[in-house]
Length: 357
Image 1 (cartoon, rainbow, N blue to C red):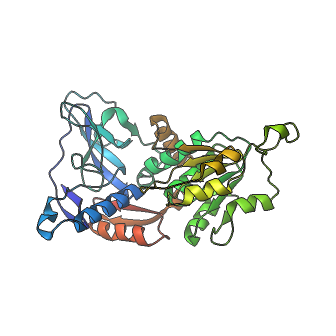
Image 2 (cartoon, rainbow, N blue to C red; image 1 turned 135 degrees about the vertical axis):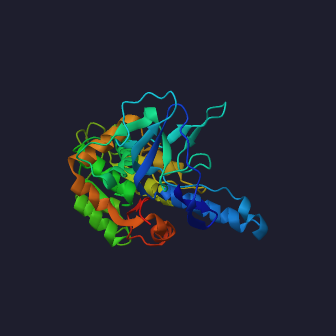
Image 3 (cartoon, rainbow, N blue to C red; image 1 turned 60 degrees about the vertical axis):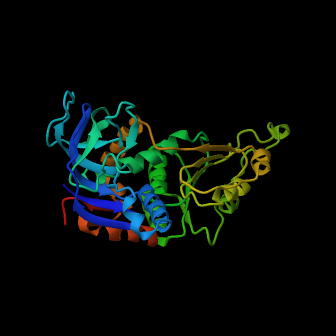
């Protein structure tokens, strides 16, 4: 098969052995594949590992075929695999599968040297983690199911009802959070991002307020609108009964130092949900969170029902969801797509067609 192969800093288009489905797996042909921040982070780590090796050892670095956000058509089922789907059916799947080794360990499709991902003309998925794509969902938008499910999971964790929602970072996950909040009728929503393109996308999706954090504090914005949450002291509980119980604050950036700034600026009793991945050591001042009685929670991935919820959300309003897609590119331009996403904040979601060269 044809595939985009990542090794160290290099991404090349070449042949790769066709995957063979194990029992319980389905062989599928990807239709559209999104490039995720996790793919960019993997490449950053691969580049760092490459730089630490002498040139004659760089060929020892692992080779992977990235891509865990994709829509696909069923080619065939693995041996002894029961499935309601038939060849040609359109599918999406949770990108986790099991190895054929005795330990049956789980692997992330597209982030594993064992299981190639969606930046190829073939890949495998778990039969029990596959979902049919509704007729109302276009082929390319179905590839957004995975990142939308990430945002929906964060929204489903948020516990502050009748309260404002602050979304920090309007990349794919931040925009997915906005879509999830709107789908659940939760508002108002304030979105913040440095990128004008991403702010426009947040506004187009329905955020009530959109700001540039280099010019305005999101927390000061709520104070200017006379939002007053419960004070921290239990002695004042009766006086302030009926006021909103803080805000839901979604960190969809994961930048080093941001969590500490959120803790220092958040309204009392807020629920802070961290979705953006910070891969570095970070610090915060616990006292700030204690005196304002903040709830800190970390959101990872999604549940199967949230995958289905994401599909239903796309089906309900595909034109709105299309706001996230900024580029469609052929497989041959995968390396350039990685570079564009890493360097150009105006890009939001780039989709690759593995069958276009």
